[in-house]
Image 1 (cartoon, helix red, strand yellow):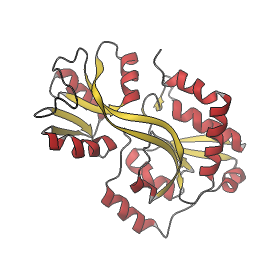
Image 2 (cartoon, one colour; image 1 turned 180 degrees about the vertical axis):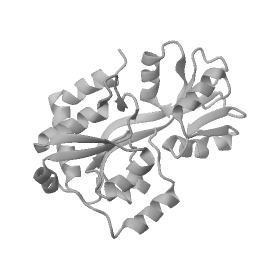
Image 3 (cartoon, helix red, strand yellow; image 1 turned 45 degrees about the vertical axis):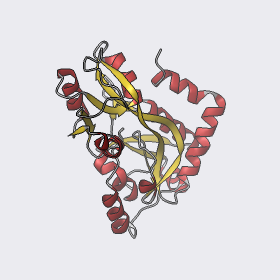
Image 4 (cartoon, helix red, strand yellow; image 1 turned 60 degrees about the vertical axis):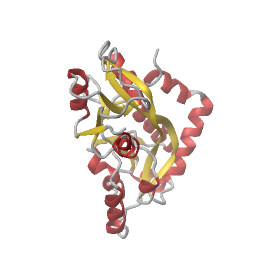
Length: 258
């Protein structure tokens, strides 16, 4: 999506300010304490969200559980708002890793370490079911009001691609508020991650759909302190899961539309 991308200037400031105080959590540290602490912003179904029982669950969570299992430790989940999650909770050592549909970008890689990509998503346009305003990208952008979530990769892609085409961007702190404006007709479309459309169709049938072509593709990665060998351990788990078919089972459970 999301997942909110820190502004480049903010990232560089964080990099400079915290360079001398970054805490690097290692495999040895995690095994010594017997727990892998995961930070996540549980607001992005189906990747991470609170279920009806109040427990945090989702695609990202199951992958993190597999990483912890391979390390021989328990997984502890800490709910962190995204602004604090990336990168402060990782660089400060508050958490050992972060997963929250976090897009891998060169700017972020200057501050934190990433695993290899574990999911490829795309920024797509969400419209009211039936697309009553007949929105289509890239054919129809001039004068259209497009909602974006603040400080996300979608917002920055929209600034680069949509504004030059004459679109008007409306920025939301709350993604749900943007959906409400789509439903009421106050905006023409809302940018969000492709899996969000699948989730919306399942949870709110007959209310939303995707329109036009994807704006941009992006890869999600697991996040660690720069230089941590936990990234290599996570990559090893991811490779094992893909080879065994476990990864595909998780895709089928959480992402693939039946």
